Length: 127
Image 1 (tube, rainbow, N blue to C red):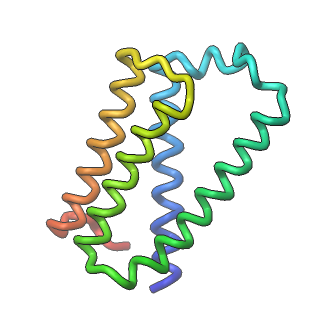
Image 2 (spheres, rainbow, N blue to C red):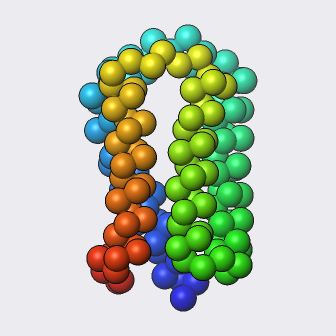
């Protein structure tokens, strides 16, 4: 069961990389990444590494917390935390909220809501 849990997280990671690549293309981030003013600062790279480590720790914590809640409760809490984290990122980082960025946020929330709905209705294929 734990191996399938890790396979599940690996699949989610791969799907999110593909979706974010398309989102980066449409929002213009893919072409303006080299113009990012903090690209060559160690503080930026340290923040990226800290974000990756924190994300991995959250992943490990979610595996542990999942055993304490029912599946529906856990999915609802994960959905709320992801929406809250994306909302807080608007305040923490200097982000211009334009149409492409808003679409990315809304599509992310919609995708997460559809994932929770698919899990709840049993539409996901185990494999």
